[in-house]
Length: 274
Image (cartoon, rainbow, N blue to C red):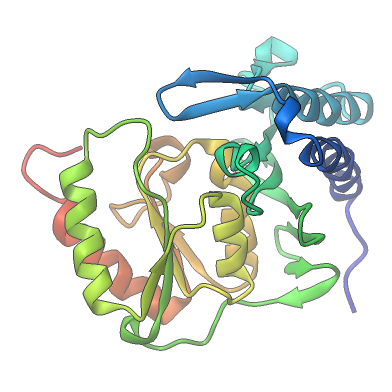
């Protein structure tokens, strides 16, 4: 039986569902969307902003003392969200490019971090109506059903997720080398385009592993906690826990994780690379 939910999870689920209702309504009128470019291949719409505002309103009402780190509006709250013990990390619409093309792979991602460590996580897929939640020490769930990472034992049998570089191409050569090796050594690679859902899929066993370069905290804060609570491993490319700062992430089922990390490191640990 699932443990009683922490109030923070209940509020985050409420916020995610409110954002999803805004997203679903807009999904029926994509031709009317006003799309702006924040940077090459990096888009934002009024839907992103409206969904984020709805999330923040609900969180602020319940937890006015908490800080906020959100993709579109940045840091806010007590001392602008800096130095506070509790900070909400929000991606109101992960997979905006998918969304504006009508490609049905996007999600709302909300995490509550305490002293920089995710403690609660919510990822909601409004297309599939799948709600992923986790609290530290209490397990991970999809629609109230306990989930666990896969039992895959070998990288050779693993289905992996990744994300292609699309904003910055400083590490494109290393990325392509890693991609080439893992394409040969795994059962296959997928790039759906919403990192939060990729991580939720690792937690639920749909993917056996995941790796990506240059993620933002809001792309992965909720997903990494889901994986940890589902029995999986997460690390940066050095095998450490600094992924929220570095943006470089390897995650997976325990047996697959080790082989995956070694394959990534073999091409990343080049002279002079940081």
